[in-house]
Length: 204
Image (cartoon, rainbow, N blue to C red; front, side, top):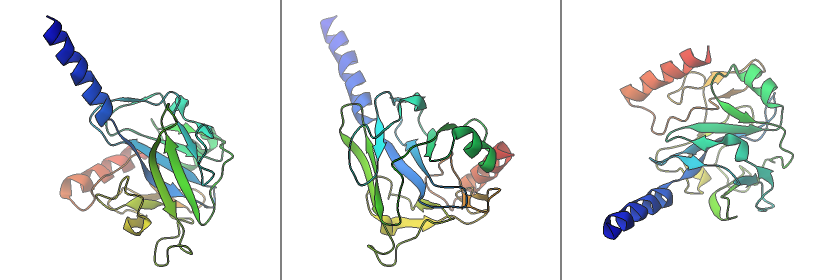
C-alpha cells in the first residue's frame, strides 16, 4: 500500500514539474495600449495563485497574476494597461480572462518576465528592434512565436500578426491587429486554420 501511495505522490510531483506557462503574444504599444498573453503550454492544469509579471526591472511580485485562476492545458489569459472591461470590449473578446491596469508598462526595447509563486523565473522574452536589428517591432501589430520558440527568449523567432493569419488574428476597433486570448501553437496546418476560423466565430 505504501508503494502505491508513493507512486501516486511521485506521479503528482511529475505532473506539477511538467506544468509550464509561457509568454505567447505581446504588443508593447498600440492605438489601444499594450498587452501580454500567457498560455499554459503543458498537459496539466497550472494554479496561477502567487505568480507575477514584471518588465526589465525583473522584480517578482511586480504585477499579481493570481486573478488568472487555474489555467487548463492550452488556456491563455491576457494582461493589459487599460481596464479589463475596456480591453474586452475593444477586442471583442468572449470567455477570455483579462487582468487590467498594470503599471509596469513596456517600452520599445524591454523585457517580459514571468515568475511563479516561489519567485522563480519561469519565462522571459527580451525584445527590441533597436537592440536586436531585424527583429519585429510590436507596435499596433502583436508579436507571435514561431513553432518551438515559446520559452526560448529569442525574439528573432517571433513574427507580427496580420489580419486573418493562421494565428487567428483580427483588427480591433482602434486598428490594432492581434489575437489576444487564444494561442495557436503551430500555424500553417489545415487543422489550425480551422481553429483560426473557430476563434473568429468565438470572438464574434
